[in-house]
Image (cartoon, rainbow over all chains, first blue to last red; front, top):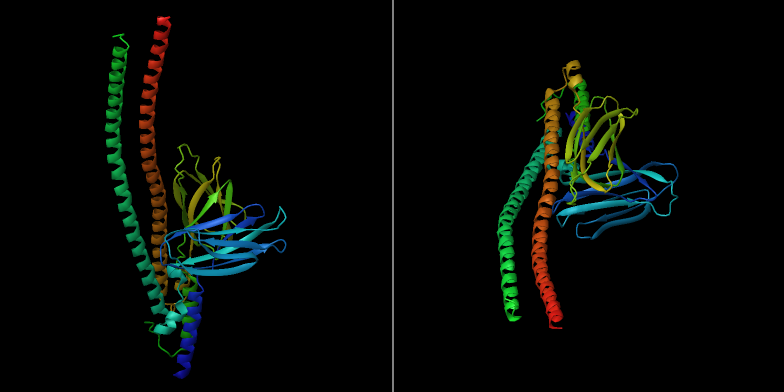
Length: 210
Length: 218
């Protein structure tokens, strides 16, 4: 009985490690010497972001410089001339978070393939420790992950609904403004023409031409 | 709850295999990244299994520039052996999906034929449902795990649609805000122009008649 239990927990740990190590696939792109590559994502407030980047393969030993900025311009992470690294932060603003990569002091033909693994929200959670804390086995952990994914989808849809309401208000405001400004344009035109007529009439009467 | 009789050793190894395979069928990573394209930007994505469905979308974020005649952005997907898999040109954005027949590194290139740099928001998801083949071979493999993997892929599809919607909403929002700004600035400019032109007219007519009167008095 003890041997079976040990085997079972061993398998669970192996499964959990694989589940947690999930998402190790990364987006790869090329950084060349004269250009800066920037990747941005719009993230909401209070979301955990975990990312790591590395040079996958390049012809010589090139190094890249990384800078991560928040939507208001605060610098969250800066590393010069590294081959790999990672950063993690919790967002305190809603907006575009940008990670920029470039090469300093490299020959003009240098090209490096950078792999960036960028995880936010649900995927940044430490499932191994959650599973250990709540004593979940493989199936329960899977279902818990699915539940978290469904919750995050639900909250994203609510966010979309709010944005749509804002846009609808903006559109209705624009529509009513177009109507008002059109009428006002006409009134301003007529008013200005009337003023011109009155002013020139009084001017000619003063000059005794009329 | 996994209900397996703790007797047979073979069943435990199958359980391990299932767990390993479940681990490999990952939940959607759910990231939509934005990048600016001057002429061409290429992104690489690794496909681990033959037969995986690769899906995704890209949306061109509008700058709110005056010229509405954008040529759009073209997406060309190349397989690891160099064959072109998909070529799409879109002005606003497009979703795509294809089945990867080779495993390896796929190249997603975004081309911008126009003169101005364009910002796009793209999302790529490699979806793998394991076990559909293995289920027929081995009756000890639990269909429950395959179904959970299916649910996971369906959730990933929903998430992908949501990401596409969010990107389009962002684009429409930029357009609407630019419309509002243009409306106000053009209206104020129009009024200033109108009043300025009429003042100028009155001034010129007065000057004209002053000069004429001056000549006549001579």
